[in-house]
Length: 307
Ligand code: MEV
Image (cartoon, rainbow, N blue to C red; front, top):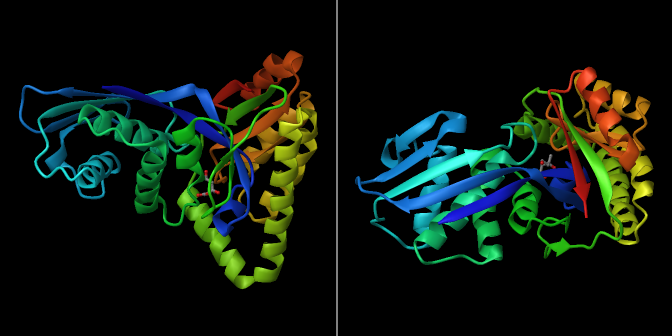
């Protein structure tokens, strides 16, 4: 049984999402995880994940191992106490710790492939729930947006603890994802925003409210086929993220380079302090803005069409 899951980027609302404000995220299908589960001729659950140099039997992995814990959770959820012998192979083109949701994508693809192979395929909402439990094990207090957009592989309008909304894209538009190459310390950035919020709730809450408005207007602009309005919203959202101290010189540098090369707007995307930025571009500018990002030091620039 094979299963795949895409990467993701957050268009608007990161960090505020943890505080129940709306956020928009989109799947990035140019990168993905593929998991294959097969019956094995040798006893045990053998995991092969060359991307993270992992070749091991499940029992040899510590309890909190990111891959091992997903497999154990699936067995637990399916009430399987003595699983059959399996070979599990995980291939990924999603860069790790880049804010593209590699961990959540591995969870989603693994949950689907394992449950399907064991004849107990799970519904999307169950896959999403299980992937969220894994995210909580590894990332502290995640909002759940990463596992949601990756499970449903569609643009999502996400509010923590509310039913998930997907939405239609009125007119396709192009976003470039530029990677600083600096590992994104999402858990730490989320923790630092928490400390800031505890010190100065009034101010930080009002920043979150501004970001919530941006997500709301962003969704309307996308649905009504006016994506060109997103550029200004990205710029505003980035200023709020700077005020939350989650940007860094390298992200700011790529954002400036994108704007200078003709992007309609740009912002950091995800936890910040490294990882990715995104820029909105008109089709004819896509290649030149991607080139400008690479010249400015991005280790990767992915051109993705949202439709
Ligand atoms: C990480 O992709 C997005 C954050 O808002 C954290 C979260 O929502 O879990 C920074």
